Amino acid sequence: MKVLAAMSGGVDSAVAAARAVDAGHDVTGVHLALARNPQTYRSGARGCCTLEDSRDARRAADVIGIPFYVWDLADEFHEDVVDDFVAEYAAGRTPNPCLRCNEKIKFAAVLDKALALGFDAVVTGHHARLGADGLLRRSVDLAKDQSYVLAVLTPAQLAHAVFPLGDTTKAGVRAEAAERGLTVADKPDSHDICFIADGDTRRFLGERLGTAPGPIVDAASGDVLGEHGGAHGYTVGQRRGLHLNRPAPDGRPRYVLSITPVTNTVNVGPVEALDVVEVRGERAIWLTGPPEVSCQVQLRAHGTPTDASVTVAGGTLTARLREPARGIAPGQAVVAYRPDPAGDIVLGSATIASTVGANVAA
Image (cartoon, rainbow, N blue to C red; front, side, top):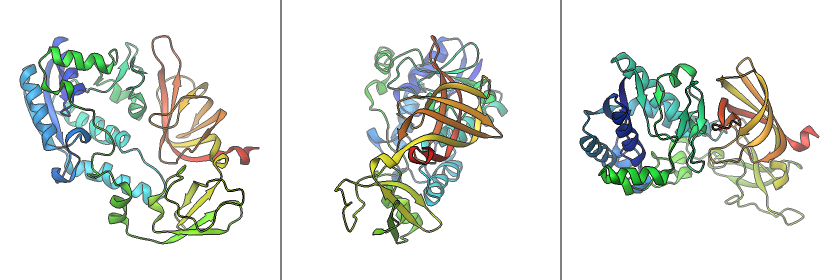
């Protein structure tokens, strides 16, 4: 095939591109310039969208021996990922920007452009597997598995995707990179949010959404316990930084239970009030199997899968959990998996819109 290898400047995408060449494909490397001002994005070990990364990607392409280009997608990234991130927090939700980047940039803007230019597929360094049946599966390296953030992809997008690393551990990828003479073999993994240079999400949001004081309220009694400077600075399950005026009668800590943007209210309560037994997601993508199934669901990027009964109807996914899960935030993804001897299969996904608490269900 004629394939486009998305090269981030990290070790995974470099080895993925090299493996595509070994497989006999006609490979062209491309680095995505996503920052309007690269100096404002994270650098070194903490970045994935910097000038340093672009240079590392180019050097890897030279070693592999493939053509290399840089595509400027900064405007698309800002609109579809950064602006979306800010808008989601303003609406009281907690988004996953990496998931949105995969959906809107790497497998929408990039794939569409690649197909228009005559490429057959896009190769990436994600740790996930695509079986001969076209179904998305977890990586063999469960600690590095990225199927959760790829579960937003449609069957049509998966049909034009290649994930060469799903059968290899991260340690194996690094060893292979060293054997190939790739200088990124020991480059640290990128992490956190690439477009927040100092990692201070609250400051980043405050600069864009401003300060909007509002009450912190006891969800059970309705008593006002304190004041916040902007609800966007809080997320479900948060314990620290609440600065409440008075402790709970039993002396136990309180946690953020929910955020009500309409009244700019942060609602708090005891830890057990975070337990949910039902999750409802919107914008559902169902990849395979009947729309009613017993399976496992994962509710955050590095969360532990839990047994559930899932139904999908009219673009809505409802997961009824066998055991309560704690601190599930709207805006994250719910991803359904079917255990399989060849690797857990992704059945589908949705963006969490609401939850039903264990105390409500009872």
